[in-house]
Image 1 (cartoon, rainbow, N blue to C red):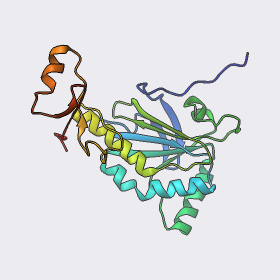
Image 2 (image 1 turned 135 degrees about the horizontal axis):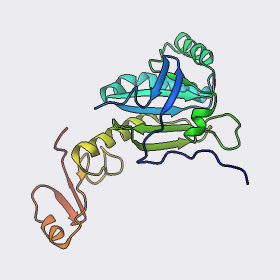
Image 3 (image 1 turned 30 degrees about the vertical axis):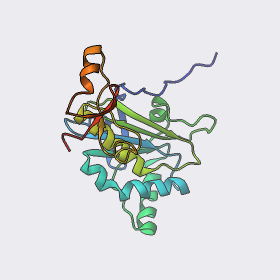
Image 4 (image 1 turned 180 degrees about the vertical axis):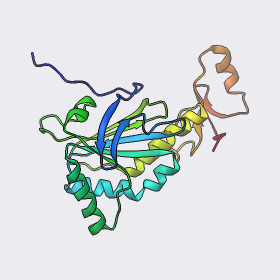
Length: 222
């Protein structure tokens, strides 16, 4: 039987320690990035000098300040050598007038294999993976896209904001937040877990309810 490599880190797992060479020098992830309030988004792309990946890097770069405002660092990755990354960065700046401000990991395959990023049946090509890692180094969100579909950077930003809001508010976040069709930018109160709380829930003035198990309130700590 063929031996399987490491699987994808699951949500709730600590991101494995990664010693990497990047376009900004050597780094140890997540320790060199995450801190008391610093988040990490680690994302992979299939290859440098490819059209969809180029549009993605332009998208990440043009939103870099928005990620920084959310105390979040971006780190890219593909199975390419560092000089290919540097040359691609130069091409993007010269032809698209966009500077890539974040580091890109030059991987020989070991990092991608450790994180389950290698595209099945595609040789050394990595999938379009996104790992959102919190200040404790814990993987909180995982997104995977096939080679033929580019990612939506605004959705990645939205998911990051939603996750940070959920942590800050001690609440859940509805669909399409902050523009949910039912409750707007309100957050969802955790459901009652006993009969007494369920009965009290509907009478509370701290939140609004459709029923005792579906209550919402405005954010307290915007």
